[in-house]
Length: 182
Image (tube, rainbow, N blue to C red):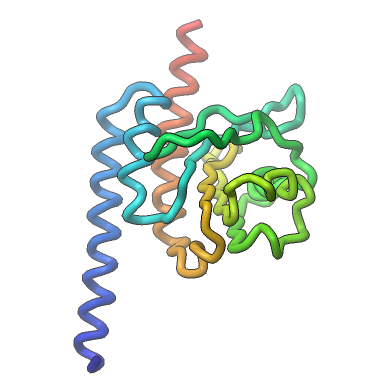
């Protein structure tokens, strides 16, 4: 493949990613509740990320844990994500505390997060966790779980961060609307 053909292929791939982001923006604008939004997003995101489960864990200040707010899949599954995980020793807790994405390409080779070892016997083999943070508040994390080791070797973190910014704003707005309506 010559240089021009290679550059065109990369440009086409980037264009597809940004078009998918645009479609995700449209989906975000059309939903008023998080469960429906994430159900819609779970299948649309398959073109950007290889995952089996998409979850949002929000920080619970009273208990000092990351609490599972919702989990969605594109295909039916029996796997259940943990309902909560401690801040210390968990992937979600580290991403939330440090405000940096965490990409685990193979859970079997990972030893930084002892809490992650609790899902080793489940179909989860790779994880990508992105902080959901506004200028005023650290809300939690959005986590992608995959049944396949190695799927996040080529993840485009720039695209993932752009998407997580969009999700952060919708989570923030919808959570505040729910709080105000009480």
